[in-house]
Image (cartoon, rainbow, N blue to C red; front, side, top):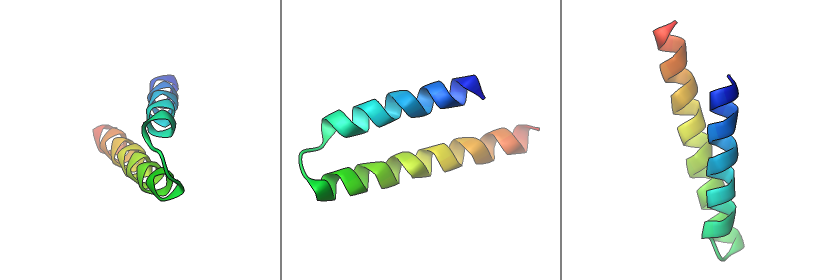
Length: 47
């Protein structure tokens, strides 16, 4: 769980610094959310 939170924090920092417009922020946050959801699904399958 800690590793997942750390990954999310790093991805969030990259997303926030990598976009220039509000539209870009929305798209980047959406992509980050998809990655977190996928990681959660993968972790759940392993259990």
